[in-house]
Each structure stands twice: as C-alpha cells, then as structure tokens.
Length: 312
Image 1: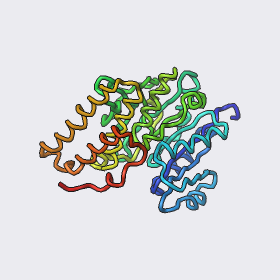
Image 2: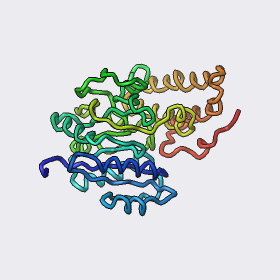
Image 3: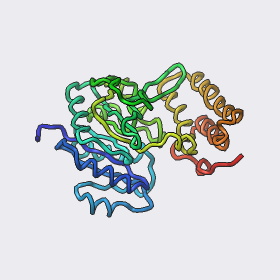
Image 4: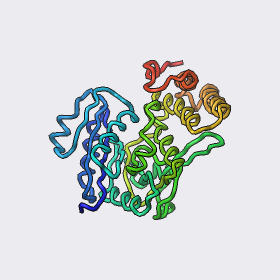
C-alpha cells in the first residue's frame, strides 16, 4: 500500500455545503487507499468548516475568508498538495458524486504512462445518470471554439475503454501529476472562473505532457446547462475568458479581435433579432461588457453590475 502514489483531492466550496457533504460522502467510499481530502472554502456565508469537520473528521478544511474564484481557490489547494509531498492532485467540483473506483482507474492510467500530465473521467449528468456531459474537450483553433466531446449522448460504448488524448479535460474533475504541476505552474488567476482549465491543459500539452480522457472512470455532475445559459456570470466569464484564452494561447491579435466580431457581436445580434432568444435579450450588455473588459485588460472577479440583469 505504501508504494502507491499519494493523491490529495481538492474540493472547492462556495456556499454549497449540502452538495459538498454529498460529494465527501461519495469520496469516503473510494477503493483507492492512499488519498487525502481537503476542502477549500472560498469565504462561504454559511461558514461550513465546523459542519464538515464534525461529519468528516479526516477531511482538512482550509478557509480562505473570501471568494478567490475557481482558479485562486484551487491554487490554494494545489500549494497545499505540493507542500504535503503529493504525487498527484485531483481537482473536483463540490457538486459531484464519484464512482468508488474512479480514482483508482485514473491513477492506474497515469502510472502506466509517465507522459500523462492530466487525466479526466467521463462525467455524466447527475439527473440523467446515463447521459454524458463531458468525455474531455476539443478546441477549434480556426474559429476559437471549444466544446465537450460526447455531450448529451447516452453512453452506448462509443467512448471505448482505452484512454484517449484530448485538447483539454474539464476542471470539474482533473487528476494532475506533480511533475506536470511543477513544470507547468498553477492556474492563471486572471480567469477567476471558466476557461482556466482549458488554458492550463494547453500549457501542459505544449510542455510535452498528454491530456487524456479515461472512459472507465466515472462521476456525476449536478449541472443544468439550460440554467447556466441565462446566468449573467456565466455569460460574462465565458465571453471574456474565451478571448483571454485565445490570446494567451498565442493566436495573432487580429484572430482574437475577429473572434469578438464572429462571436460576441453575432450572438448579441441574434439575441436581439430572433424571438426564440427573448429570454437572453437582457444579457446583451453583459456579453458586450465581457469583450470590453478583455480589451481594457480588466480580469479577475466580474464587476458587480454583471450580476444585475437589466430587463429591456
């Protein structure tokens, strides 16, 4: 048992105690014997530390005192994992539940190939346990688009059983090798939330590491895309950070600027013209603000105005 690599699992919590407790319960059933769980709390209003410590005494709780975003909060956990001598760090969303063997399967794949820097599981919808949300992700560099492989498809064996390289795996669940973390560095905190894991995976691949999807490792995510599509903070962060990702990935400036016209302005016009997008019209200013803030170099947390939808 002592020869197995040590894994530190980082669960980031922000005002989601019930989800976090269910996630921790599923982690307590893992069949992999050498792991440690830490919960990094991003300044939650409900002060979850005492409850977590009471119900899961073996879990370490780190309280940031403020919302550092996905990137900043997880970086706190990554620094802790490095200080503990972990061989791997696993970033895991708090609104997930995991299969008992998912960590063992991920570690086995990484241990079999030292060039694997980041590995991710198949992620299914919590409310539709057989429907895929993500089997890794792909990037269209010509258009600057990203998408989840396999999204909204039932798994009928089309993913196979062997690991496959992907352009990225989602930050919902990603196992990161220590040497890759040391060579590639931490998450870029300018992103705050969204696209930071895509940029991280791109950095890892350019440093010579593989990013792989592991079909046999399974978790379930409490995500509802139809709700996220009309969330101002999602529209803002994905809009701004998509442009930041493209720029940091080395695309010429004219390609990044063209992405604003091909995506931001086109989408805003679509939301204006077509009646089927009536529920998104109040988000036009948010989308355009995301491009404006990118051009001005305004990164990190979104301005407060983003969270106030203006009815048109």
